Amino acid sequence: MYEKFFSLDELPFDGLPDNRFYYVGNYQHQALDILTSNLSRNGSICVLSGPSGSGKTTTVRMLIRSLPKRMRIIAIDDPRLDPHMLLATILRASGVVATSFESIAELTLKLRKLLEHSIESGIITTVICDEAQGLSDEVIEQIRLVSNIEGELGKMINFLLVGQEDLIENIQKPMHKMFWGRVKAFAYLKAFKRDEVHAYVTYRLQVAGCHDPIFTNRAMNALYRGTGGLPRIINSVADRALCIAFEAQKKHVSAFMVKKAIEIVRHERSVFVVGIKTFAKEFIKTLFARVPVLLSGVALSFAVFALTYKYLPSRINDLSLQSLIRSEEMVVEQYNRAMNEMLPGRNYKSKALALFNHSINNSVFISDSIDTLIKLNGYSRSDSLKTICSDLDSVSLKCNTVSGDLDLVKMVNRVAVLKMRKDDLTPFYVVLNRFSKDESEIIVGDKLFRVKTDFIRHCYDGQFTYIGIKMKSFDRMLPKIDIDLYNRAMQKLSDKLDLQFDKLKATEAKYSLSNSYSNFKSLVDDDFLRYYLIDSAVWQGANLEE
Image 1 (cartoon, rainbow, N blue to C red):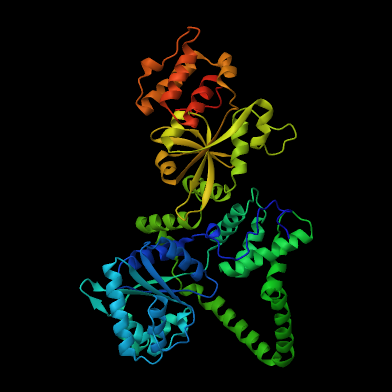
Image 2 (image 1 turned 180 degrees about the horizontal axis):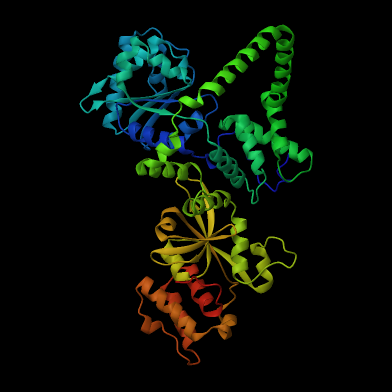
């Protein structure tokens, strides 16, 4: 299909269950927190609801991964069962024989013995009922009765009901008042917001191997409006839009392509065209069938306007509502505060914050930050194209991607690309230009921001990339090593690893440097730290400024 054309490793919107493509939005994150904390212990009934296509099944898969390992998960996908079938299904899924000849009381006794044995073995039993809006009233009542089974340690089984909005209406019936009181947690999945749709599409493209934006901003807006923010529909429409772009041999998906994909996937015609035709029909009908009524309405409106214009001004006090508002300092202060929140950019502070958030939302591709990093080190392409790590081969340099904390970044002391993650787990990338205890400088896109260092510590995802030399054998690197730089790097490593610097310090003697490095290798079995020592002594790239 279109994978090779867009330089993708695989289909990004295939819709198959793949853990790598799971995206956690705000509502998914809240639902996972609520359900995980309640289902990790016995005796909980939880409800997960949301519109069709909102990602309930995906959220349940993620939930199963986050639950304790010693848990027996029983999934019931077909709600068309009776109380007898419910008990038999739970027993059979647990490896216990259950026949149709046994009564509900006999099956309940078997279930009690099973649960008691499970509790003794440290196993939690959780039953997940999908499409639960289709459960009968009798089955809902049976779930309540089963959840009441108690042992010496209390309740012994969990239930999770997953369904559409009708599920809430069903369990709110007066006959289920006792069941409603037993529910410990309700989680509701809403559709993605506009910025979440942008983050969701970008995340799936990145996982599939995309390094540059494919959907334009207008295409993202059209995708949000046409799908209502529902993940399942987003997948279908985005996949079809990529096919349309591939057929047209276009490297970017436009808003027109997304609208065309929506018409194909959802069989929907343009709202604008339908609206125009509807308006024309209504206008013609009104023009020929309701002319007398319209004329009467126009005449009455003109009469009311004339009377109002003549008599109303004399009865209005000169003191206007605006002057009343401005006379109260507290009201003015609240008014200005509200306007600042609603209109980003109304003053300098809110404008800077809006610009920062906009830059963060657009900095989702590492290639842009790598291009900035290379330019900060004094290199760029002669053809003005975006520079990438492979362009450094000609100058015997390379990009080093390292997993480590910010203390390691500070020790390396090079301008670096940091992998960051927002509170909704969306990744983004920044270039760390200056690093200090309280304030630091980062480059996001093409803009430089001064931020609190705590912000970087909060969002940093444990991985950074910086530029260093292409390492050759130590003997070949020996003539290029600066003794002072070598000892400075050795001092940092000695402090970090609690080594005796005096025994590792190199001097101007002929064999001192070789002996120092050999002693260091015998003490430290970390390839990166060995590389850092030589790299710091040979090449001085763009350093972090204090």
